[in-house]
Image (cartoon, rainbow, N blue to C red; front, side, top):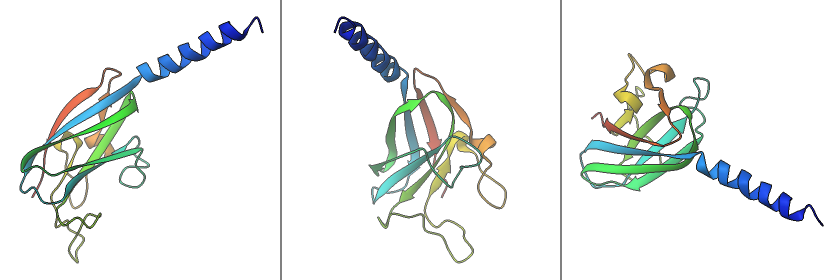
Length: 140
């Protein structure tokens, strides 16, 4: 019973430390052509999972001109994100028969690939423990 206060103190200290290291990523998305639908962001933390398995995702109602999405409670580290404007609200990135996106999209660092999406390393950025504000422009 004598160790209970010390144990409780240690547990609180560990919980506070883990919450203090949670960062927020604020992304301002420019060149939003309409207020239809939502803007969706998926966040990736490695080349092996890029565009396959996200570590976090968020969405916001589209605002014509500029829309902001905040992804909270992220550990500091390297990430890349992909964004698309789900203007028709069907929950997926639409593409034509050739696989070319028909909805507006963007990648972190305004990266783009040749004959397909960019590589993780081209879109990669470092999220510091203090958080980060980023801006990206949608491609039409």
